[in-house]
Amino acid sequence: MIGKSLPKRADKARATWPAGTMGMSCDKAPGKTASGAFGGVRSAAPGERRLPRASAFGTAKPPEGGVANSPLWPRACGASTKARAIAAPSARCAILRFIAKPCPRVALFRRNRGDFKPPTPWAAEAAVLGAVPSESTSMPDALHLLRTRRSVKPMELAGPGPDTAEIETLLTIAARVPDHGKLAPWRFIIFEGDGRTAAGEIIAGAFQADRPDATAEQVDFERKRLARAPLVIAVVSRAAEHVKIPIWEQQLSAGAAAMNLVLAAHALGYAASWITEWYAYDRRVLDRFGLAPHERIAGFIHIGTPLARPADRERPKLCEIATRFTG
Image (cartoon, rainbow, N blue to C red; front, side, top):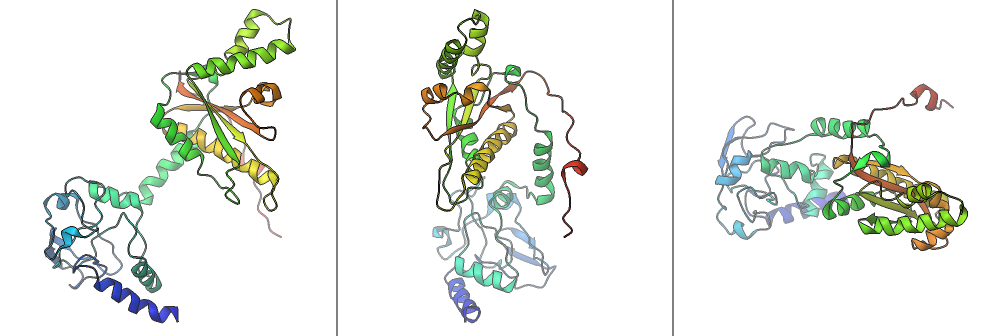
């Protein structure tokens, strides 16, 4: 019943768009040229997906018939990365891309026919800028990022550190992790500037209480625990009893947040070190840091600029850590 109604719904939705703006099929034969807002553009062959050149966005004019007021027409036809689609009524060719979601009914219909795949936002934005990235060009960059990540000791990290905008980016990415039940069983504490010194005094106080015979150098070392790198972000696990989600899974989610934080720092050009150290397990320190009785430190992520290029270390061999289940 749904399959029969989809074409009618799609045709009705399609009819509400100005001519030439949907452009999911081409009136001309494959290999020919369609004229319109882009000048001469070769129409797409069967199964081929074509994009307009970036230069077309600078010369195209709004088609007649009120399309300039359509949400598909970009607010600025220059280099605006928010341009959504441009097509002339006479150029009924599959050459438009969307940054915003297309009409849901049309999307379902095209997907039902097997010839529609929603474009990714970065691809549409790159089309506006004149470059059309593909998985073949972006995937190696992502894999290179993962392969080259290396922990750097806190004492080997210096300024400059991430600024306010970059810290927001780090935390945004850190929060994008698997989270069974959407519990957000983690939170973050930012130590920067004078906050690092204040935290160091708490650590030094707990150390002196346990080691009254400690030397001044030892106490000073403890006082600088969180001042070695320009930025330290504590990942706090707030896993708690739940009727459905085990505490173990919540703790794993906190670990994933810490790893995302490390990778994000690497992607921004910084280095990071994920450590805990003794004060991460000292209840006196945790209480002063504002942790609730059930909360724990998943790690202190020290972030900064590496003083030298870190050398890689030997990694475990796959034959020693991976097996295939055969039944």
